[in-house]
Image 1 (cartoon, rainbow, N blue to C red):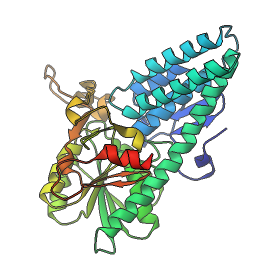
Image 2 (image 1 turned 30 degrees about the horizontal axis):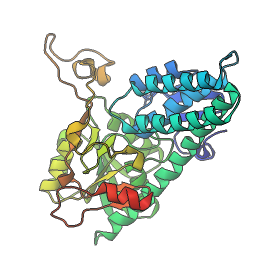
Image 3 (image 1 turned 120 degrees about the vertical axis):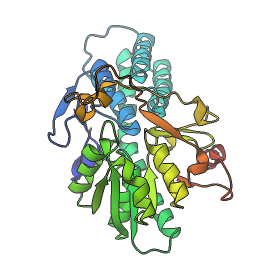
Image 4 (image 1 turned 180 degrees about the horizontal axis):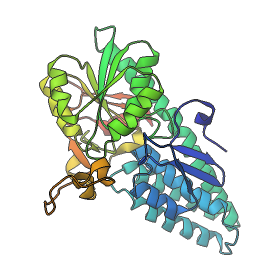
Length: 372
């Protein structure tokens, strides 16, 4: 079984057929397109941790499929159904530790555990439990593409309806496209939908220091899809807005708290502050799986810190040293944008808005209840 996106020309970060998984090594883009064979959950964990695959939706899918491949090729398992369930539960818990900030991963693990437990209670053989897990992971892959396309449609329509302009220029930060999801993308999906609707003047992407996901990945996708686009330095975002060249900002999310506070790639908060000052609407595009209703605010979001080498060396830590030896480094992978800076949260079920423009937060729980 393969993703529906296999039939399109869209870039694929994930190539999957039952029993086989390949992940595009995004650390080598845009100069090389190399796919790594993922044989088990350990390979999946390392690929996620090493940023071979990244983006909250793609991380969740890659983790689930890595384990699916492992059990599809597991011929010598002799345990009971309970043993099979325990095996899968422990593997999922291990995979979640690869990137703790991305809630999609833990959300996927929780849902898959429920399916595993149900299968263990209703089937008589371990193979039946494994089969149920594999099928559930494959459905996640299909659902992610459909979800992203819905986000794109809702986002493009909402942004168009809230402007009098016929052509729009949109700024995005980090990478949220086909390379960050199972296909199409979240924030970049909105940009794709605007472009296909003939209303996109230009997409602007930041370089997204220090790992350069914008210059390496988003620019790569925009060029591939022939979308009119311009790359800017992270520090140029305020000047671009001051010049009146940005009509909206659309970014992704790794985790959204119940009040709307959003964790996304480091630098997102800075862009949001600039947008607020220049009266540019700032939107978050994310599937409902990125929302964590257990968190009342962004203060409870755990922020992952990454290797100092990403700042000390070129190419996100992979190249030559450029900083002075002995300097200390603080390298958070994400920051939290407060809800009061966010104009709307674009999901596959619609756009979450505030009751009034002066509201500091969103009533996300009510939206989720109404659309579930």
